[in-house]
Image 1: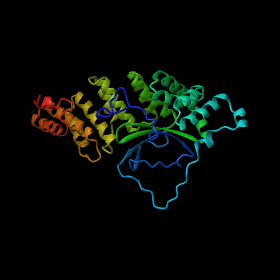
Image 2: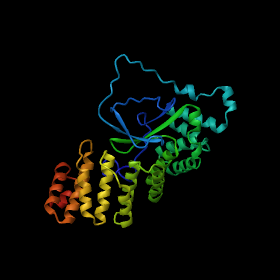
Image 3: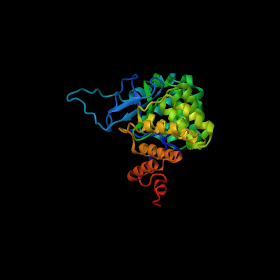
Image 4: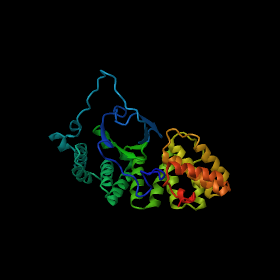
Length: 342
C-alpha cells in the first residue's frame, strides 16, 4: 500500500510486511501496558483509534529513560504459551496448534510456526497469523485464502489471542516516516488483503478491500490516499475516476505529509478534469507547508504545478518550477527533457 511519489516504495508489487525483530512482535499483557522504545526516536500516532490499526510517524529524537528509573522485565513468552499436561488434555487440537504456533513465532522459528498455524487455520486467529507468515514467505495464494477465512470469521478475531494474553502487532512500513501497526481485527485483515491483491496484480480486488476499509473508517486519511493513488494509477484519464478522487479529498487540510499527498492526487484529478485554477490553488496550499515533508513529495508537487502552469499557458512559471525540481533531483521524471537538456 505504498505511495508512488516516494522512491523507496512503489504501488506495484507493493510493500512488504516486515516481520523482523524490529518490525513485528507478539506483545503480552493488556492493551496499553506495553511500551516500546526504539532506536529511531519518538513516535506520533495518527489515524482512528479503536479500530485495530494505528499509524505512527517517527522523528529522529532518541528517547533516553530517566536515570534510575526501574523497568520491569516482561514475562517470558513461554510462561503464557506452554501448556501443562492436564491443560493439553483439556485443550482442543486446533487451539493447541495455535498456541504452539505462537510459541514458535516468538522464538523465531517461522517455518515451524507456519506448520502449526496451518493446522489451526479453522480458528480465526490461526488463519490470521498463518496469513501473515504466508505473506512474508510470498505464498500469496495461501495468504489470500487464510485472510479470506479470517474475514469470514471476523466475529471471532482476537478471541484466542486474548485468552492467552497475546497481542500480535504487525508493522507495515508505508513510507520512511509512516508505518501502519496492524492488529487482528477485520480492518487489519482487509489491510493485509489489499497488500496480497496488489502483489498478485489483482487491482480491482485491492480497490474493493480499500472501499470496505473506507466504510469501516470513513475518515482514515491513509486509506483515502491509498485508494486515490490506486484509482489514478489504473485509470488516470477516466473522468469518473477523477471525480472519485476529488470526493475522497473533500475537506482535507494540509496537516501531515499524508494529507499533503492526498492534496497532490486531488490536484492531479482536477487537472485531468480541466479545472486548472482549482488544481493550481490546491497545489499552492499543499506547498505552503514544507517542514517534515519528504523531498520526493515536494518534487512531485512542484512537477505537478509545472504541468498545470503549462496547460494554463504560463510557461515562465512552469519553467521556474521545473528548474527547482531539476536543481534538487535532476533525474526526476522527464524534467531534464522538458527543460531541453536532453
